[in-house]
Amino acid sequence: MALAMRDEYEMSVEKQQLEVRKMVLEGLEQVQMGKTKDFNKVCDRLENKYRNAALRN
Image (cartoon, rainbow, N blue to C red):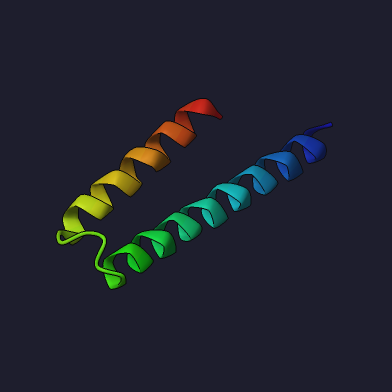
């Protein structure tokens, strides 16, 4: 039982890490495309998304 819970936790962490990486890459793409002039705003928005996602899980 404990092993199954640990595996589930590890899978959840890996999924969150992949989602964060994807969001960071999306933000960098937006900067490169000129959709934003302030990289800090992009980082703040990504941080907000990540925090909100973490609260949902």
